[in-house]
Image 1 (cartoon, helix red, strand yellow):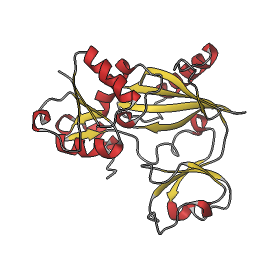
Image 2 (cartoon, rainbow, N blue to C red):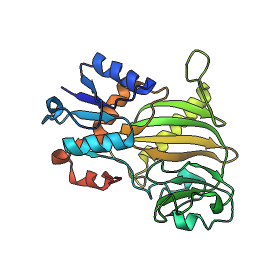
Image 3 (cartoon, helix red, strand yellow):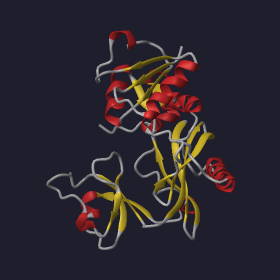
Length: 264
Protein backbone atom coordinates (compact mmCIF):
# COMPACT_ATOMS: atom_id res chain seq x y z
CA UNK A 1 0.00 0.00 0.00
CA UNK A 2 1.41 3.43 -0.93
CA UNK A 3 2.42 5.75 1.91
CA UNK A 4 2.45 9.56 1.92
CA UNK A 5 4.55 11.30 4.57
CA UNK A 6 3.93 15.02 5.07
CA UNK A 7 5.71 17.67 7.10
CA UNK A 8 4.13 19.24 10.17
CA UNK A 9 3.37 22.41 8.24
CA UNK A 10 -0.36 22.58 7.44
CA UNK A 11 -0.86 24.16 4.03
CA UNK A 12 -3.77 24.02 1.55
CA UNK A 13 -1.56 21.92 -0.75
CA UNK A 14 -0.60 19.36 1.88
CA UNK A 15 -4.23 19.13 3.00
CA UNK A 16 -5.37 18.55 -0.58
CA UNK A 17 -2.77 15.81 -1.01
CA UNK A 18 -3.78 14.29 2.34
CA UNK A 19 -7.42 14.02 1.24
CA UNK A 20 -6.52 12.72 -2.23
CA UNK A 21 -4.22 10.06 -0.78
CA UNK A 22 -6.85 8.84 1.68
CA UNK A 23 -9.44 8.70 -1.10
CA UNK A 24 -6.98 6.59 -3.12
CA UNK A 25 -6.51 4.14 -0.25
CA UNK A 26 -3.02 5.31 0.78
CA UNK A 27 -1.65 5.42 4.30
CA UNK A 28 -0.98 9.04 5.28
CA UNK A 29 1.00 10.47 8.18
CA UNK A 30 2.01 14.00 9.10
CA UNK A 31 5.38 13.92 10.86
CA UNK A 32 5.81 16.36 13.75
CA UNK A 33 9.54 16.81 13.51
CA UNK A 34 12.31 15.41 11.36
CA UNK A 35 12.68 11.99 12.98
CA UNK A 36 10.79 9.18 11.31
CA UNK A 37 8.86 7.09 13.91
CA UNK A 38 9.67 3.39 14.00
CA UNK A 39 6.33 2.37 12.50
CA UNK A 40 7.23 4.19 9.27
CA UNK A 41 10.70 2.70 8.99
CA UNK A 42 9.31 0.26 6.48
CA UNK A 43 10.71 -1.73 3.61
CA UNK A 44 7.85 -0.49 1.41
CA UNK A 45 8.99 0.77 -1.98
CA UNK A 46 5.91 2.98 -2.32
CA UNK A 47 6.69 5.93 -0.06
CA UNK A 48 6.09 9.45 -1.31
CA UNK A 49 7.32 12.54 0.54
CA UNK A 50 6.01 16.09 0.40
CA UNK A 51 7.03 19.24 2.25
CA UNK A 52 9.81 21.76 2.71
CA UNK A 53 13.14 20.90 1.13
CA UNK A 54 15.14 20.39 4.34
CA UNK A 55 12.40 18.26 5.90
CA UNK A 56 12.08 16.04 2.83
CA UNK A 57 15.86 15.64 2.57
CA UNK A 58 16.27 14.57 6.22
CA UNK A 59 13.34 12.13 6.06
CA UNK A 60 14.55 10.68 2.76
CA UNK A 61 17.98 9.94 4.28
CA UNK A 62 16.37 8.00 7.13
CA UNK A 63 14.22 5.98 4.72
CA UNK A 64 17.01 5.44 2.17
CA UNK A 65 15.00 7.26 -0.51
CA UNK A 66 16.59 9.02 -3.48
CA UNK A 67 15.00 12.37 -4.30
CA UNK A 68 14.95 13.07 -8.02
CA UNK A 69 15.24 16.53 -9.56
CA UNK A 70 17.09 18.43 -12.28
CA UNK A 71 20.66 19.73 -11.70
CA UNK A 72 21.58 23.41 -11.42
CA UNK A 73 22.65 23.68 -15.05
CA UNK A 74 19.46 22.17 -16.50
CA UNK A 75 17.82 25.47 -17.49
CA UNK A 76 20.95 27.14 -18.96
CA UNK A 77 21.55 24.01 -21.04
CA UNK A 78 17.99 23.83 -22.35
CA UNK A 79 17.72 24.39 -26.13
CA UNK A 80 17.37 28.12 -26.68
CA UNK A 81 14.04 27.74 -28.50
CA UNK A 82 12.54 26.55 -25.21
CA UNK A 83 14.15 29.30 -23.09
CA UNK A 84 13.76 32.36 -25.36
CA UNK A 85 16.08 34.32 -23.07
CA UNK A 86 19.63 34.28 -21.81
CA UNK A 87 20.13 32.18 -18.66
CA UNK A 88 23.55 31.62 -17.09
CA UNK A 89 24.84 29.60 -14.14
CA UNK A 90 27.59 31.25 -12.09
CA UNK A 91 28.80 31.67 -8.55
CA UNK A 92 27.34 34.32 -6.30
CA UNK A 93 30.74 36.02 -6.30
CA UNK A 94 30.62 36.30 -10.11
CA UNK A 95 27.02 37.51 -10.01
CA UNK A 96 28.01 40.37 -7.68
CA UNK A 97 30.12 41.83 -10.52
CA UNK A 98 27.16 42.22 -12.91
CA UNK A 99 26.55 45.79 -14.01
CA UNK A 100 23.17 45.35 -15.72
CA UNK A 101 19.72 44.43 -14.33
CA UNK A 102 19.01 40.69 -14.16
CA UNK A 103 16.65 38.21 -12.57
CA UNK A 104 18.87 36.41 -10.05
CA UNK A 105 18.08 33.45 -7.83
CA UNK A 106 19.91 30.71 -5.91
CA UNK A 107 20.25 27.64 -8.12
CA UNK A 108 19.60 25.05 -5.42
CA UNK A 109 17.52 26.58 -2.64
CA UNK A 110 15.90 29.78 -1.38
CA UNK A 111 18.87 31.08 0.59
CA UNK A 112 18.35 34.61 -0.76
CA UNK A 113 15.44 36.27 -2.53
CA UNK A 114 14.82 35.47 -6.19
CA UNK A 115 14.24 38.89 -7.72
CA UNK A 116 15.21 41.43 -10.36
CA UNK A 117 18.39 43.15 -9.15
CA UNK A 118 19.47 46.44 -10.70
CA UNK A 119 23.06 45.20 -10.51
CA UNK A 120 25.10 42.56 -8.75
CA UNK A 121 25.98 45.10 -6.08
CA UNK A 122 22.48 44.64 -4.62
CA UNK A 123 23.06 40.95 -3.92
CA UNK A 124 23.77 39.72 -0.37
CA UNK A 125 27.39 40.19 0.65
CA UNK A 126 29.96 37.50 1.35
CA UNK A 127 29.44 38.23 5.03
CA UNK A 128 26.11 36.42 4.84
CA UNK A 129 26.38 34.04 1.86
CA UNK A 130 29.20 31.89 0.54
CA UNK A 131 30.89 33.26 -2.58
CA UNK A 132 30.65 29.79 -4.14
CA UNK A 133 26.84 29.65 -3.93
CA UNK A 134 25.48 28.43 -7.29
CA UNK A 135 23.40 31.21 -8.81
CA UNK A 136 21.13 31.46 -11.86
CA UNK A 137 21.19 34.77 -13.72
CA UNK A 138 18.48 35.38 -16.29
CA UNK A 139 17.72 38.11 -18.77
CA UNK A 140 14.82 40.24 -17.54
CA UNK A 141 11.58 39.45 -19.41
CA UNK A 142 7.88 39.99 -18.79
CA UNK A 143 5.75 36.89 -18.30
CA UNK A 144 2.16 37.36 -19.40
CA UNK A 145 0.82 34.11 -17.95
CA UNK A 146 2.41 31.12 -16.20
CA UNK A 147 1.39 27.45 -15.90
CA UNK A 148 2.63 24.66 -13.67
CA UNK A 149 2.71 21.09 -14.96
CA UNK A 150 3.40 17.85 -13.08
CA UNK A 151 5.33 15.51 -15.35
CA UNK A 152 5.46 11.72 -15.02
CA UNK A 153 7.64 9.72 -17.41
CA UNK A 154 7.67 12.58 -19.91
CA UNK A 155 3.87 12.81 -19.87
CA UNK A 156 1.92 15.88 -18.80
CA UNK A 157 -0.12 14.43 -15.94
CA UNK A 158 -1.86 17.60 -14.77
CA UNK A 159 -1.42 21.31 -15.45
CA UNK A 160 -2.96 24.55 -14.20
CA UNK A 161 -2.37 28.30 -14.47
CA UNK A 162 -0.98 30.16 -11.47
CA UNK A 163 0.20 33.68 -12.41
CA UNK A 164 -0.83 36.45 -14.77
CA UNK A 165 1.42 39.50 -14.94
CA UNK A 166 2.96 38.38 -11.66
CA UNK A 167 -0.35 38.07 -9.80
CA UNK A 168 -2.00 34.84 -8.63
CA UNK A 169 -4.67 33.65 -11.07
CA UNK A 170 -7.22 32.87 -8.37
CA UNK A 171 -10.72 34.33 -8.27
CA UNK A 172 -12.90 35.23 -5.27
CA UNK A 173 -14.19 31.65 -5.13
CA UNK A 174 -10.71 30.20 -4.93
CA UNK A 175 -10.75 28.92 -8.52
CA UNK A 176 -7.65 29.08 -10.72
CA UNK A 177 -8.79 30.86 -13.87
CA UNK A 178 -7.54 31.08 -17.43
CA UNK A 179 -8.90 31.16 -20.96
CA UNK A 180 -9.40 28.08 -23.15
CA UNK A 181 -6.95 29.36 -25.81
CA UNK A 182 -4.27 29.93 -23.15
CA UNK A 183 -4.82 26.46 -21.72
CA UNK A 184 -4.54 24.94 -25.18
CA UNK A 185 -1.39 26.90 -26.01
CA UNK A 186 0.25 25.93 -22.72
CA UNK A 187 -0.61 22.25 -23.18
CA UNK A 188 0.71 22.27 -26.75
CA UNK A 189 3.98 23.83 -25.59
CA UNK A 190 4.34 21.30 -22.76
CA UNK A 191 3.85 18.46 -25.25
CA UNK A 192 6.43 19.91 -27.65
CA UNK A 193 9.05 20.14 -24.90
CA UNK A 194 8.29 16.68 -23.55
CA UNK A 195 8.53 15.11 -27.01
CA UNK A 196 12.01 16.53 -27.61
CA UNK A 197 14.67 14.05 -26.50
CA UNK A 198 17.19 16.90 -26.29
CA UNK A 199 15.36 17.88 -23.10
CA UNK A 200 16.53 15.47 -20.35
CA UNK A 201 14.01 14.87 -17.57
CA UNK A 202 13.76 12.70 -14.46
CA UNK A 203 10.74 10.38 -14.22
CA UNK A 204 8.89 12.72 -11.87
CA UNK A 205 9.32 16.51 -12.03
CA UNK A 206 7.48 19.83 -12.15
CA UNK A 207 7.86 22.17 -15.11
CA UNK A 208 6.75 25.79 -15.10
CA UNK A 209 6.11 27.36 -18.49
CA UNK A 210 4.84 30.76 -19.52
CA UNK A 211 4.31 33.23 -22.30
CA UNK A 212 6.98 35.93 -22.60
CA UNK A 213 5.64 39.23 -23.84
CA UNK A 214 6.67 39.73 -27.45
CA UNK A 215 8.44 36.35 -27.73
CA UNK A 216 6.11 33.45 -27.03
CA UNK A 217 5.99 30.36 -24.86
CA UNK A 218 9.08 29.31 -22.90
CA UNK A 219 10.17 27.14 -19.99
CA UNK A 220 10.45 29.16 -16.79
CA UNK A 221 12.13 26.51 -14.65
CA UNK A 222 12.01 22.94 -13.36
CA UNK A 223 11.22 22.18 -9.72
CA UNK A 224 11.28 19.01 -7.58
CA UNK A 225 7.80 17.51 -7.34
CA UNK A 226 8.21 16.71 -3.64
CA UNK A 227 8.55 20.40 -2.72
CA UNK A 228 6.39 22.21 -5.29
CA UNK A 229 3.08 23.94 -4.67
CA UNK A 230 0.25 22.30 -6.59
CA UNK A 231 -1.84 25.45 -7.23
CA UNK A 232 -4.88 24.33 -9.24
CA UNK A 233 -3.47 20.97 -10.27
CA UNK A 234 -5.36 17.76 -9.51
CA UNK A 235 -3.91 16.42 -6.23
CA UNK A 236 -4.93 12.86 -7.13
CA UNK A 237 -2.75 13.07 -10.24
CA UNK A 238 0.10 14.77 -8.36
CA UNK A 239 0.44 11.73 -6.10
CA UNK A 240 1.71 9.54 -8.93
CA UNK A 241 4.36 12.11 -9.84
CA UNK A 242 5.49 12.25 -6.20
CA UNK A 243 5.98 8.49 -6.25
CA UNK A 244 8.20 8.73 -9.31
CA UNK A 245 10.26 11.52 -7.72
CA UNK A 246 10.89 9.52 -4.51
CA UNK A 247 12.60 6.20 -5.21
CA UNK A 248 14.17 3.72 -2.80
CA UNK A 249 17.93 3.69 -3.42
CA UNK A 250 17.93 -0.07 -3.74
CA UNK A 251 15.41 0.16 -6.57
CA UNK A 252 16.93 3.15 -8.36
CA UNK A 253 17.71 2.32 -12.01
CA UNK A 254 21.19 3.28 -13.14
CA UNK A 255 19.87 5.81 -15.65
CA UNK A 256 18.08 7.70 -12.84
CA UNK A 257 21.20 8.26 -10.76
CA UNK A 258 21.97 11.46 -12.68
CA UNK A 259 18.83 13.00 -11.11
CA UNK A 260 19.91 12.47 -7.51
CA UNK A 261 21.15 15.89 -6.37
CA UNK A 262 22.84 16.29 -2.98
CA UNK A 263 21.56 19.63 -1.70
CA UNK A 264 22.40 19.38 2.01
